[in-house]
Length: 301
Length: 148
Image 1 (spheres, rainbow over the protein chains, first blue to last red):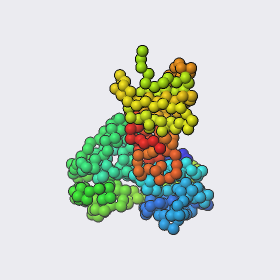
Image 2: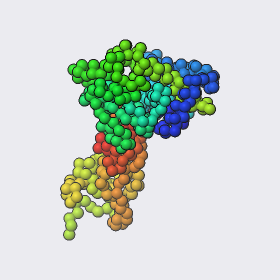
Image 3: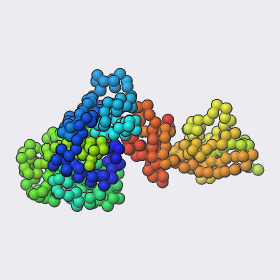
Image 4: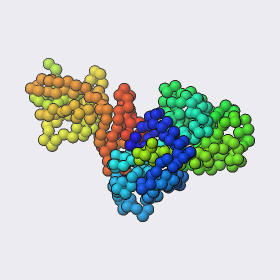
């Protein structure tokens, strides 16, 4: 594995290797030493969580971080092409982690440079490190990825995270409940792909009745910027609010996940229940990104 | 005797069964040299297509790669290589598995529309003529494509 650009490139074997390494690094980060290695963070748009999670991952393994956030004050503002910026970064560092608003930007950069490139989000296309940390979180909280029942809740139409997750879990015989307002249903091309892969799923517009049945509830934010029509947004924005009261019938092992930031879709009284797992999920991001950095830098043992 | 609307050519290439109205796009894609002798026919009657366009290029034999470059515009086109007024070779166009630098990505958020770079599409399904952008990963049908 030279780069990490898209979940489509990742075999099930490679995915399992990364999950195992993340698990080992969580227990003992000292087994990998990235000292004197430099990670270049090329963030063409703001992202606090993903960027800081990568920085933390690199630094905790002894590595260094350089980079940019946003394009103001950089050569990009002077009209430098993405390829040129990336080629210069490649002379300064050992690995590039990049986020860019245009879809396919990371793939393009990976073709332009000789060092590994990690896609930390390219527009609405891919965010493979999020998908992998979600898998790691599910594995850690349930002890297995196989045969789980998962509810994916909220914006299933535009939610890149839930699309990736559905594909990433497909080989592990899951049962999905896709819970969304009618206007934000899972896209039909994804549903037909899942059918073809033999994955069983049900579409729902309400969450209450399935809560006693599920192992994982993956909640996403309904984003205002996705709606051309304000009125349409107002109609659905409060469709699924997860409260502690709503979870009283949940199974003991059930965990609530959320890629964060949340707005109001999970109330704060859920935080203190045994079901809340979204902060652990954020922490898991560091272990998974350590595994990714170590693997791409050729240090995974 | 059958009336010939376009003069036969001695040596060169004939592209028949181009959908009516697309002959200019086909020609633009083939990028004829300034000295090429080219005949274009539009709206000829056809049993299979009702109406069709046709192109004859005198003195130039198109390669299979050149021919395939028009596959997105004229999927049913038939190509004949003419030598000494006789058909020396016949072939159909085929959409290449990989299409480089020929069509623009219809996704305005695709990096190929922002950077000075060559587009690459991979044929997902030859029966539906679905093409996947190598960069933004979106899948489009051939009819959605615009040639660069």
